[in-house]
Image 1 (cartoon, rainbow, N blue to C red):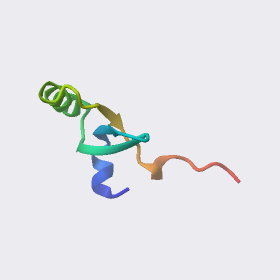
Image 2: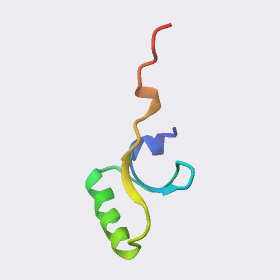
Image 3: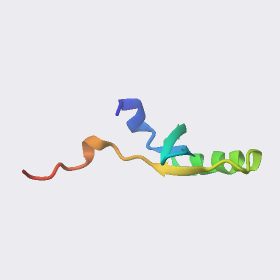
Image 4: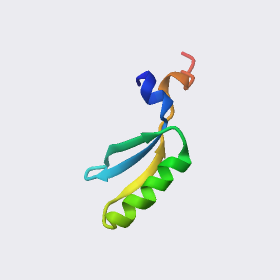
Length: 65
């Protein structure tokens, strides 16, 4: 995960077949992501979009061995 990605943990994702996702856009704040999501849902009502928080993997503690 790059530094720029860490600065923008909230993202709008499009759900694709076979349980895959595609990141549409990234945001620093949830409110910004949610506002654009509502706009996108009005413009394309059949699309499967959602807001997701992607935590930095470096901050997740590793299990003890």
